[in-house]
Image (cartoon, rainbow, N blue to C red):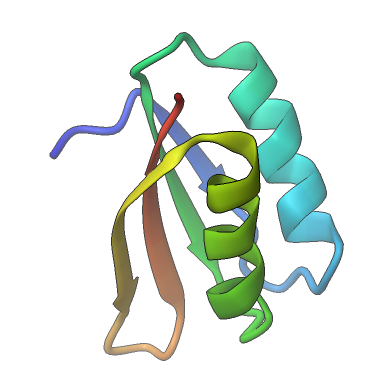
Length: 76
């Protein structure tokens, strides 16, 4: 899966990753994939909720070998 947008929020804590994701979603076109890299464990709850409430698709959620998180979100 190829992302049209990449957002690196490693090192940031709630609410910054969600605020930056919201900004990236606004710039993206419908159907675009945004890859989000994060280190805050709260994103495992916050990003799925963000997608569910705003009508975007969380197409991948993964914990990487370095302990960070990767999310692939398709703008609805």
